[in-house]
Length: 440
Image (tube, rainbow, N blue to C red; front, side):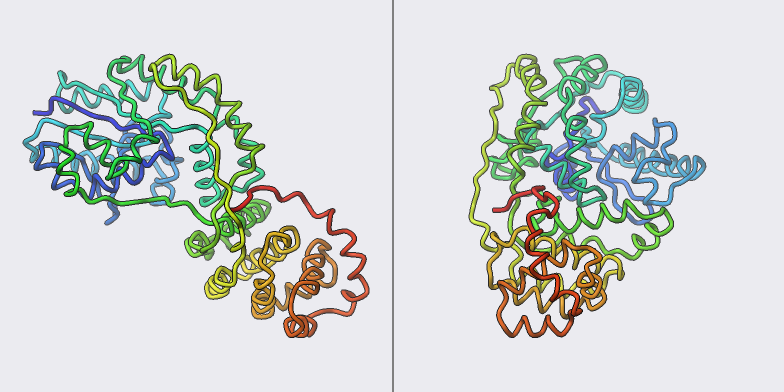
């Protein structure tokens, strides 16, 4: 009989996906230790994140949930069918289990309202054991580092820098207080257990090992866990391109956006190799200032060692837009829709114009080769001065690139470009502010 139920509620961007995938892959080992981590299956897709299970059971208009949209669950009848399927899978696993500990994990449970949290509690007590003890496990993290990860994830999915920088207040406003006061009303303060990410990552087996120790797995046996790492940081170059693509897609009509997005292969862009990123200090300090009062409340409420402003180590950015990075992009760009190719080429040109002082001069010949191979029409548009900031990028290439590369590029250009070269160089300082990120 289940006597103890643990619910891991994130927070988002604090190793939640790694924990879920690792526990799912370690489910057989956990059962041997008297711990059940339910694993579900929908259309041959393994589901290890349990907020899917709970959202479909207790949310109204669950068809608006992104997961359901992606899975084609777009009406109440289909969602009800999936609810029934997941419930049967859960009961089957529960009935064949002989241990006394049950573990759920879903980072978006942290955002459920009071009514939804009470619905979860009622479901667990009615369907498992009315006398079971429920404990809430929460991984917390310095808000500056966490929000940086949130922004990266949003851009990997669909957003862009300008939009996310405007949304910083929404990401930070009383995050801890709002969450913990809700959970205290439903589950009581004593049931809420905090694990600090900064401590967890020092564990030999990372946050997964830290959580498993908490739920009763002997650290000596952590080597038997199947640890999976997820949502690794992306490169500076990948984020810049994704942000630009997402921003330009957002400006299209819904039909045009859908047409391009349906054939846009996002994963190869996410995997672009390159240099690491460092967010501007102005953004990091804004996150810290907006989070400060909430942090003070957290420290007093749980008697924690106070968080401090996290300094970041800045390293040389000599590999920015390297030859290897450009070669990778050239190898994968032909599989993208024409519009995406244009967005990528144009953005790279802007980067070379605005970051020329940071880029290794050896990269310029590689860039010209890239443009020569991929963007005849784009180059003509640029050089006809329809968008002057791109012509400035080409002008800079004439300054930095070798003579052979210049000759190759010259074959592509329109005579209008030559007449406007000096004029464009004078306007280089008027190019839009692009301090979204710095690099390391």
